[in-house]
Picture 1 (cartoon, rainbow, N blue to C red):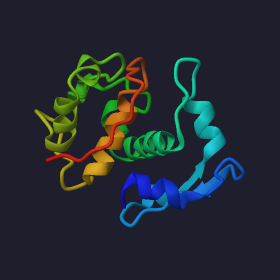
Picture 2 (cartoon, rainbow, N blue to C red):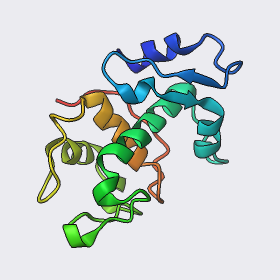
Picture 3 (cartoon, rainbow, N blue to C red):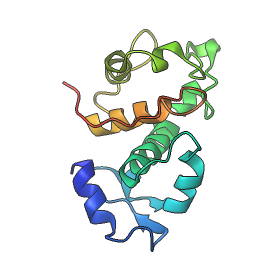
Length: 148
């Protein structure tokens, strides 16, 4: 299900309801409760006000990161050099070329495993969007698209 279809399905008047379920055919993370007001507080800043679709992507990426990446990279992106997991705080790779960042998540490198069999393309994009907008990596964007 595309994000644009998902956004339309959520609620016609999302502003009236602060808590609703994320709908998805394939992802239990998106079926978890999504608190719109908490997401707005977490993500909106004076530099960037995120729209509903972007908030969904960022929150989805946050949940996926927590379940798949935080064990090595740390909940706050601090990394763990003892196991070869670099810090993601102010990270040049994350701040750099988007295609390389997405490929790194999908294919892995060195000790980092491939997530191609674990995460679908939309989930990889959402994780990258999350990583690119936390811990000083402020890209202020969420991207649509698929990986080849």
